[in-house]
Image 1 (cartoon, helix red, strand yellow):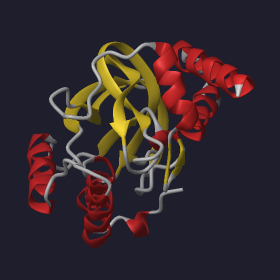
Image 2 (cartoon, one colour):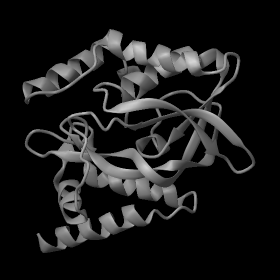
Image 3 (cartoon, helix red, strand yellow):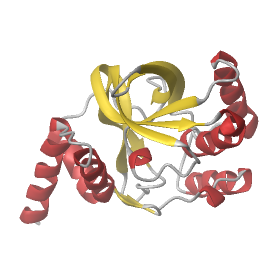
Length: 222
């Protein structure tokens, strides 16, 4: 589990150094990362709480403080394992894949509401969690909650990033999920946790279930 105390400038820089010891690793500097955060906050309406859409590990381990959490649906983007991972849940020896929001379709997840007075502190945590390498773009989006539609923040795939995978078949994706592992754990657990927390919301993601079945087939074959 990630805890907010681990998200500091010093810890982020340490993670980047560790990743680069294994090979080339594209990362944003502290100033570059902060510039993207300030750019997003300029687009946020001052005095309003901030809704954040979560679709992967944010579902069960957000690590930032929030005052409300509701089921949400985002249109125009879909959940996909399209980000190569060499830190976190991947390594040089056991590379993995992470979920991102890629173009097309729609996605069910959770919306977390950060109260106005904590937007500054909690987005600092969020940016150190999500924007170490610049693999995502912070985007202002509309998300549908059970009783209303709100605008807020989510992180979508940066298709120009060197670790973006435009196309990968399901079998190859499943093999990487079956073997990928890093200091945060395995890709397999990441997949199963995402499925479990979506099912708590009565959401069945066909794509994730197909991958889980293939991962289990790989386990059986081994």
